[in-house]
Image 1 (spheres, rainbow, N blue to C red):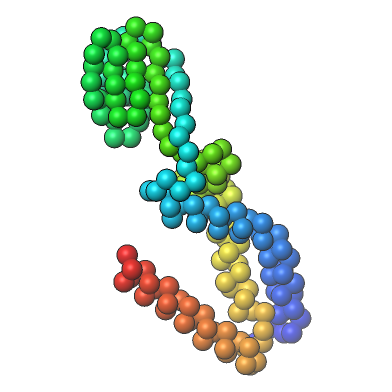
Image 2: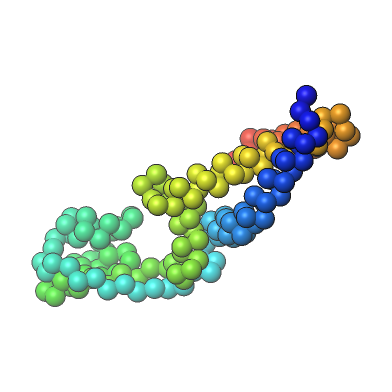
Length: 172
């Protein structure tokens, strides 16, 4: 059985890491809340981008160059290709794209949750996940196993895990 000194050390590390991660947890929670509403226009505003492309692109080359999801040509009249989110002038090569997106700081927050292994944010996300896993383990090591706090904590943790599991199974 571990000593009181060991449990007090874990409490100290848990406390200091908790203070360090408090800001990160706030940022991740805001970005997670924003992602819940990603299919709506909540906090998103119209934005216009102008790209100078090679003149004379055909429809297939334009779609490949712009890399727009669900690209669909609506018309091709007098050298202007109209598509679902903008237009392209074949003579000048100017493409105007109209989108609805978050303003810059919020867009960065949303991208924080969408980071893949190719992104520099990958390391931040992995570190954050490992730190949260440490919180889970260290929460059980903060009290001596004989104490009522520990036994009640295990029961509450099991109830929380069961609640989350049932919610995932039946709500999705």
